[in-house]
Image (cartoon, rainbow, N blue to C red; front, side, top):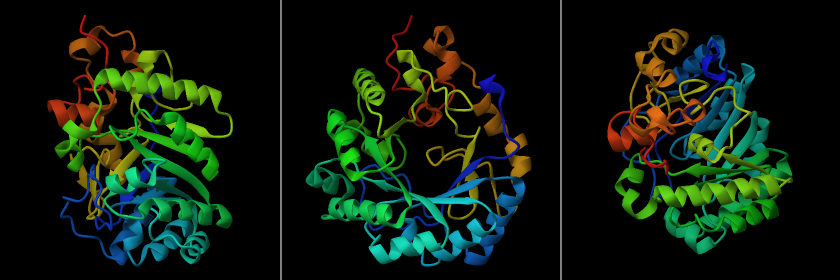
Length: 335
């Protein structure tokens, strides 16, 4: 059964190498994090431990990872251990020279954040004038360098009715994948949730339209990372687990080495500078709770729970205080 599958180590680690950023995004979850950055030497040793534990890939993030001056050396070290290296970036610092240097140092994939096909909407959301133009140029440079690219869009109040235009924009940008990320209520996302988040009914309509476009679009992989789409009768048969992958296939590591189930769940389960990653992976009470959630409220009688597993644990924890509670984005009525 999918829900019983557990690899011997996280397949992927989302690793924040810095919390510094050149943007002022309205939904940022890391800007308020005061954690210190690990030195290159300490970070390298932690990456070695992850590789020895069996981690297959690292996705560098932050903050804006390119603000870390030794990022290229970090990537070369990780790729030299046989790990697949990728990055999420706002694209502002990615000129042609930097993109080709990324390729030389082992990067195989770079995701660029663009939240609207309209430059002025994106720039306002990200807080930097000209950021949309620079991101589009970054996509072109990555394509030229032969690095796999994806476009990441945070769905919220500014863009949830523009799905068709966003898909068209992704096709015109010739990216392989368009990631529609559901809005999280962490950091500034929590502070601005009343103006940026959608109602549960609006999420239902968004996913209905997005799933229809996904079925109609053959030249672009449209990724929807929200377990609650199971309520629409759509099951993610490509995933090795049911519900969220956090704590089951992946982990998050903060700039100071602290380990959390995901970047949006601020519950520290250990620190990779002093704890054994494989032991934590197998024995953490927090991860155990996430892997075996107890349905509460309307989840207890929902026929989709076996696939949804309560939706996004990060949202449930942020807005209700308990990751076992139903995802606040869920549109199913109480019965």
